[in-house]
Image (cartoon, rainbow, N blue to C red; front, side, top):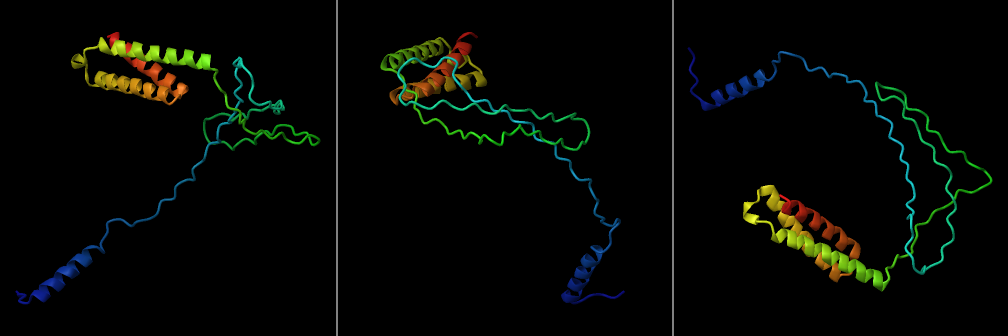
Length: 191
């Protein structure tokens, strides 16, 4: 038997053994062709302009011209959803060549609240926050589970946010968070 005495010879043999082991494979790598993906047709999006049912009483700040009516919107039937199908041709609304398309610009009119209405809203928001705080005061925090404690803490944060929003005269946000606080506190107190 031949004995290797030099470390270089052993190193060369190890490198050759590792390199040779990488050349042997049990199976050839052949790229598999996948069928192309079929992309479904996007659903139609119908957006209706939001018009309040009952406009608030009070003087208008700016006189705006009446909006021209929009052309009627048509819906696109996407067809059956089972299996691959060719996308249906979108149906375009009829276009009158004589009339130019109306251009809608967003309204820049600010909706203001009268001082009496503002005072009424502030009182209602403060009453909601007080009711939420009273409900939370009836709850034993120590007996609550982990999720209920998280809801209790969230209700406290909502009350704080409502008070800060009232100071900033952000009545819409204050009303929203006060209502959320009252809902959470009512659920916790009703346990």
